[in-house]
Image (cartoon, rainbow, N blue to C red):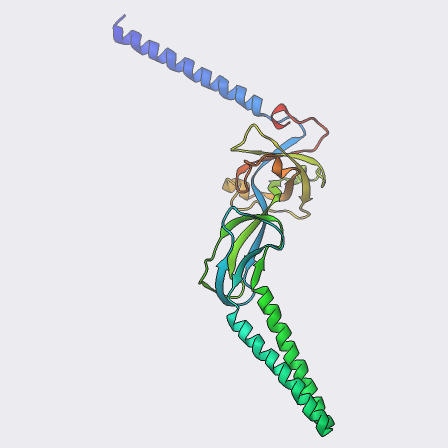
Length: 274
């Protein structure tokens, strides 16, 4: 037999063996990855509660006291708007109050009830102006409403912001969750408080314990960010899995993709989810 014929037969045999091995491995993996009856999975992304720190009134940003990644506590001063104009207006309003006490004394000496009444109204209006300006000055000090971590710094000192201008994005690392979108046949057998698991792509050996905290009462089309167009055509129900101990694995960060697992039957968790 010519040498080239033997080489061709050897190559064909090797290729056939390789294809059979690949097919066998694929079949084994599909059987190995198949979920047991009563266990369901959905794709998602780890998220955390977010709070926008923004200006209430238009003005110039005077200072930002924190950086991205800083841990902050509730009530901590994070940033401050320029209040010089407001403080000047308040000083003027306070002067008006003082002048209207003086006018009251003059009116009392003159024994004019009409004058006393008019001056009393002026005092009330000036005091209201002082209170309003004091409130605006207080609101210009941007404080943390919760304990959290600064995720984004979106404005810098000197920038002029409109009402509602965003300065910082604060996240609550103690409230992390994943939203899944599952069929009615699955969600109909789930309840708030049921155990669940979250497995992140970046941390496949560290399943995160969770509980179902929300099951939607109304179906929706799968959001556009979820994988394929065929999946987005389906009507699904949103299921929210909240981590029960988000501080247990500091490497788990909001934004990481992964999968969430739920049970519709009283079965044990597979070894990779325990």
